[in-house]
Image (cartoon, rainbow, N blue to C red; front, side):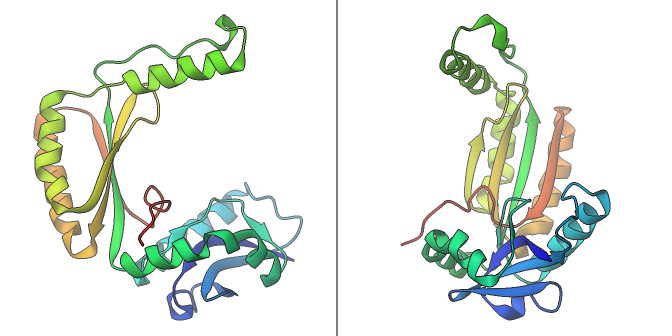
Amino acid sequence: MKSIAIGAHLLRDDVEPLADAVPVGDLYLSAVEIHDDQPLGDRDLLVRVAGIRAKLLEVATFVALRYGFTFASADAALAKTLEHHARWKRLLAAHREHVEITLKVAATTRTPRPDRHDFTSGAEYLRALHAATQAAAIDPAFKEAAESLIVPLAVKHRWIHRDEKSVELAALIDRAQLDAVRAAGEQLKRTDVPFLLSGPWPLEVFADDDHQ
């Protein structure tokens, strides 16, 4: 048997009884035990883990771990995560009642994705891909509306260029502000600009931020 990790948590009570609470130093990993030959891409497993993930977030915010992180013992889990513990503990203490939301907006100005075959080296291709991604831009009026409606509700926020077709606003929101965020989404629908407002999510975009 092995375990698939879901997130890193401050307290054991933030995990149990929804998932296994695996102690790693003075933190806990939420995990689900599976058979060694269980395919990680199995649909039933994916749905099961997603359901547990959502229920865990209702209890307290956690640091989301990349899906597919498995371990055979608590010692193995500790060894794989030890370098992150100090940062995770600071983040979890600072953002226990905060969740992430994302606003993904279709780009109105964009550069076509480069063709890998047009480049003689991988480095050149990656530079061109990065340039195309960064060139994506959204409607200025929509961006202004989003920043006036959502950013004031956020503890932290940032605009992210993930691909050449869209731009994403990620925001860290107090749970008490989620209804206000949803209301902001309803107002943004009046702009007729395609977007997807999703969340709440655990710490993902802001999981690398450090709090001294």
